[in-house]
Image (cartoon, rainbow, N blue to C red):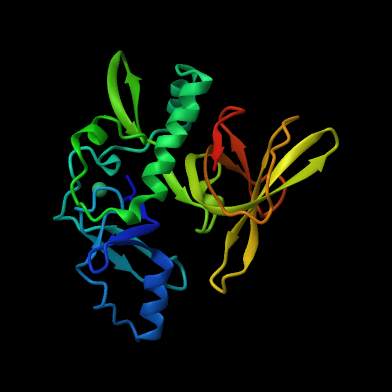
Length: 245
Ligand SMILES: [Zn+2]
């Protein structure tokens, strides 16, 4: 299995979540010297496992991965294999509409409000209820799998096509009418602080009430669909598997 990669990390020095592209930028500006970060980058979820940076090459994007000798806390979702699309679709069938929204709400709390906490231990309540871990069945046995996360400020690459993620991030939104239907357009903040179009979600006949000037936190359970060109759309796993606030 391919090693798990991290879009962001917990930085010991300031107790905040930082992004991968920040390290790449620092690497380029300082001729490959990332001693400022080295040893102080931790798993964004459990804040325990140490992460190592691998810089960008002509062939590959930069990435963060766990140092082999370092471990996640017990209930960190990074401990488990990623759920397949089939496993997630099966799981979603077993929960009702309210439960999907609850799941997204907990996921959003975990993914977006992390930088306020300097406590490096996940408390036991959270341990039992990690919103990214789902139960799946394998020949009658119950197994745990993790729903893979993807920050909306990262590249949405063709290689992710067809896989299901929880997409999350700080966004601006806009409703686009399309015949008798609606699409939700999603914008993310670029490096130069302007907002750029990122992707969209088909909403059927549901028209979202959006304040276009407002910044929203969003979580979407869905997969990338490239059938309309090189800029992907997100296809929802279920019509209500999207939450913003
Ligand atoms: Zn972890």
